[in-house]
Image 1 (cartoon, rainbow, N blue to C red):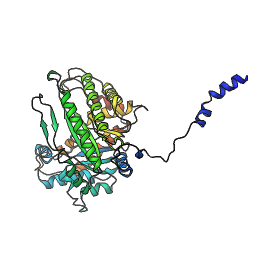
Image 2: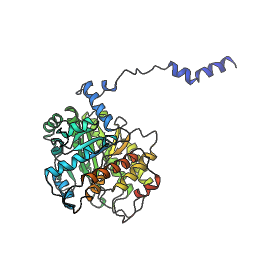
Image 3: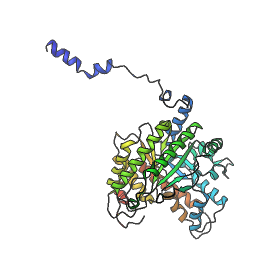
Image 4: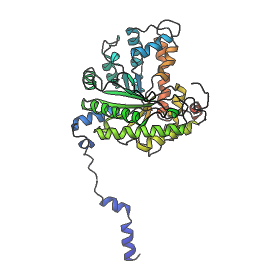
Length: 393
């Protein structure tokens, strides 16, 4: 080897170059960066809760239905909509044996946040936290239809949010979740650019307020499954919605690492006349995330949004199975109706809650959901996630 060859070999020696490259100091925390209105300690607390919520192989139970919403579900199976029935039912969701193996967090309705367990006489947030499950709360109020916008809506509750969030934190909540519903209707031009911008700005402002009060914000842009839109149209709208959301959050000074996402699974409309395989739906979801989902945010807990448990788990499983090293996020579930409606069916026409039977089925459902969150379900079950015209949930 000539001296020139030797020099060239040395210059192409990656080991030598790595050795000479300055090393990052492992003791430097990312909390020293980011919004200046938050202390390093505050950022660390937000990071810690976000990490817990995005634990691989676990999901978030959505138990935040209002008294009116859960009342309709009760009445459909012949259960009286009393506060005690609501408390008893939700206690089962929190105290089923081994539930902490499957849940990283639980979203509570404000009513439930202040209720107690009849087993221990402890407030439900304390019961959950003692199991290693993070308690959170839904702080938004009611939907408001924007005049002259073909049915586009915004969510109310920002004006009084800071005051309410302070109280929720005192009661034991460690995160919040705000939902902004969006409907696709190609014929009427929905969602309008105004509706997207207004809703995503509201989510960003909500996130900023929550973090300033020490609570992790889960942002929920909920693009409805209703409609006849194609998967391609859903991809376009969801990409636009999420890009607007993350830009608004950064513009507002939200600490992105201390927030998480709860979005809909990107699907064709329920009445879409075109068929799609579960793999096409899964890849559509990965495509949307890859366009703008910040790597600073640790995960996305998909909502069910009208899908059955079989559909939702099949699609979540396919998403995780097809995920690559370029998709760094924890992708899991935060389901309400998909899990709870089958539970309530066990009490149909009996007149009282069948707690033991519900608890058994609930655990079975969570096991399946957690397998999907790891992409470990048998692929033979994924056919349930295909979309076919006229298919019933």
